[in-house]
Length: 367
Ligand code: ATP
Image (cartoon, rainbow, N blue to C red):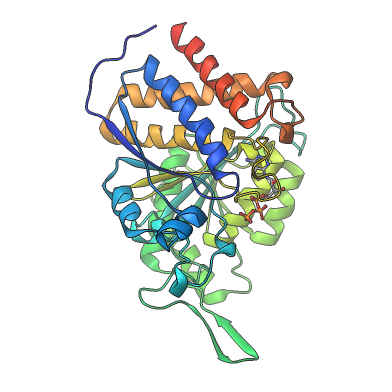
């Protein structure tokens, strides 16, 4: 087993979140602690309050100090939040997820959906795709404006939402998708609703097509979002990288993850030029919160993505190795029916699953 060296600490801020957040965060930290024992990573964790727990003690679900610590850290691990249970912003209810995406300019939400060895995907064919979702504009009216919000009610019987699409936002997310495709199977599918939203989707597609021209080695196609919902069910295996706007990406990624196995496996990274936040694709799952049965693979895998992102930026092989080890350990554990969590039909609880992943990656590192 390699002996960890002393190196500059990797400062990770942990925000547990609401619902199943504390449970899956604890399992994720168990896995990261195990990694730290076998690789020269030198993690320094700092847990900061957010969500309903912070509202009770500090009067807000997103304390400024927690934000400042997230901004100063090397990376953030964010548990899911029950933001639709929060009070209005004036009473302290701020969605930490939207807040971080906006203020840290985390424009790319990278959402893989991958079937695992030994666990049959629901579409009957192997799935290995990544949804590259624009993360700062689109129909997310609660956070897409510089000042104020993009939703309003001119009269009690009329409600309006503004959908924001920019050339810069569309171009940078397309660039992220094509760069990713170069490292994968060289195919990008742009998903849109240009037949109805002529102006906004028109601009989005114009930008993606311009980027596609710069990547002649990548096959490019377009699909309308409603057809795409059906095509994923029919055979999600034919897609490689999917690029789309904010809300379509949110919806399709839940579908793709469930088809590939379970929402409990759905990892994701919110990434910008300078910051990244590991966050599972799913919500706070209040229906199973506190029962110790949530699948933490989603957040463990997201933490792995964060380490991979950091490893690449810093050209740090230990961090990149850590990301690979997490992915391999997750695959090995999920392949064994007795080691699965209940969402995959298995018997293990959240913490026991985390412990199993930790033990497996220690074994893999020792080989
Ligand atoms: P929220 O209110 O925070 O959006 P939700 O229940 O509406 O929560 P999700 O949290 O995304 O939405 O959950 C959708 C379904 O998937 C629920 O039945 C939930 O229990 C299940 N689920 C989500 N995450 C997990 C997980 N990590 N492990 C097991 N089941 C999960």
